[in-house]
Image 1 (cartoon, rainbow, N blue to C red):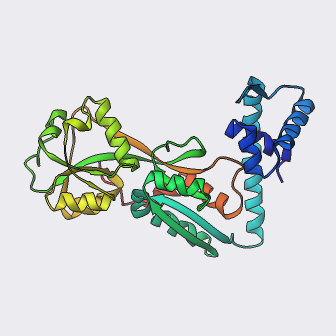
Image 2: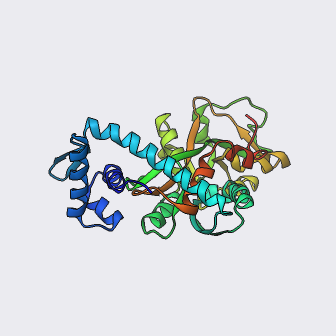
Image 3: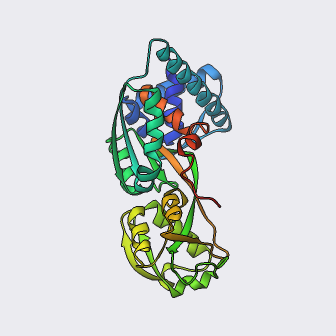
Length: 309
């Protein structure tokens, strides 16, 4: 449905490379160049600056990209609406999710999505953020749902939910009842952290470093491969840990852990939806992408899970 020249233009713009765009579109590089040249001739403007290996949008190119993206979204919405006229959306959906998202958020989103689209079949793989991005780049999955921005520049990123990392301690800890503790107090207690490669680990490490407290000054007792393992370790008295606020509602209600406010430390991040750079998704992938990004769906699907602030 989309004007093919605009589709080629968006691919080159997103990847800042004629070569990468040609690979994603399964075209030869000369064919991509011809489509861009024809579009520039048709519009009477230069869309890209090409200096050596660098490809950058001109001012006109940046303006056109906004309209091209808007056009692609409208056409995809039309495709989806037309498909719904003949019945429910169907097809296979391959998703990857980082561990926190997979354990605490994705099941509720998928439950709501499948209620509306029962003919969709699902395949879900989980891992830490870096592992999910690797699956995406290998095209083992169509979409990824991860914690924070990925390190890779080869993916398209959209926020779908905000998050806050909170410090938790066993219910009988000496800090129970305190309104807050000084930041330097963290050097006096054993900590449980996620493994390297985890989005949670990266955002905690960056926030502590920015606050003037690098990991080298802390007592790291254990590195664990899931949020659930950290919560269990804290409950067992092995140490304190930073976890997503979406993950501890049950533990707080049961009274097995407490949350502790640390002075001059606020750790916020985004949960993001990622796909490989290239043409916009179509069919069931596009339907799920829209569903996950719709703010009226996500909070409703997660109501009752988040901790009170």
